[in-house]
Image (tube, rainbow, N blue to C red; front, side, top):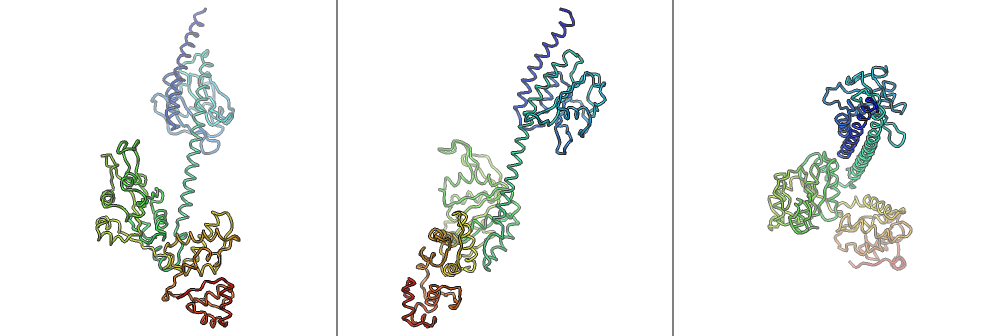
Length: 518
């Protein structure tokens, strides 16, 4: 065997060993990080240090069609020029991209297409450019490098090695693109949901045009602008959580989380862990570290419903977080800073609770910075028709059929006391929707729910004045309205209707009207 052939064989053996080691290290680099530029930079460093492929470069298609941007370059610490891009039709890199074929230059200086914009390359050495392909035939970029030697006999081996590396790089690029697309899709979906939620909780979607509710809305619009602590007060079912949502989603914190906690639903030990979090092993069952609601709400809003139901021991711990903006997890000793806006709600008379010693006075003043009092539904009966229409549409969607509610139903609803407020109204309408077969909720259907039997019977109650000659009234409504205006005295109701007592008694019987003794 001749000496030159022996020398080439020895060089090829060393190259094979170097390639295997380099491929192993390239695989390690590719599995280490999902940050594309950092990963590609690591691959090029391995090629430079271990495989003798100098001045490695990866270019990928930019956002502008036809433009290639250099994503990663490694040249052993040699200073680089400013950011370089290649436009369509420019240079050897574009030729690799457009022809979708590997290009090997035995000597750079011999090809006029080579632009050397990076100012890195030895013009007397070879150059290898490999297309980066994903999904079979989509060319997304070019992997290029310069062999450290001009040995022509080893150039095919080096080229084959670079093609293998390009295939590995292509898989990484494909994965990075898929992850980026999923991230964009998730971001778009998050933004869409945020817009939808903000729309659902916009001021225009909180129903109520009574003077009492207008005052509430004016206060909410003002308080939403600031980080002030808010205490929402009102009877159960008046919509305190809805107002809390409106404050958050119309505030500068709307990009942060809105975290809700019902303080009455959890015992004290669980409430503390749920709000402040706990460390692993803090108590039986604490098998891992748990971030509390305060940490989750960092940068956003924490809504503490039924705050009046908490114990004084818990109130003392809550007070520290409100005053200092810091907490410690249960079983931990590390202080955690949080930036959280607090909104609380209660239907309890807190002043009486403070007087009785069941609610800390200092916490009361800390929470009661900006009180908002929601009026009960019975004090804003003019809002009932609009509320009822909204709720009926909501029930119709859940039942998957059209529903409508009549004026006669509105008149009956407006005479009820609604001790359960909007929640009771919704329950009653849902019951009526189940009972009506034709999708029409009128006074007769509502009466089947027992609503008419529950109307207050006190003589001092103001009964809405109804025009007995209104053509929209059916006969049953007209007779009931006359009886109500007459205090359920049949003779007096008969005179209002220009009837005889015998005639009205007959109609009461055939219309199945239940008489009331007042």
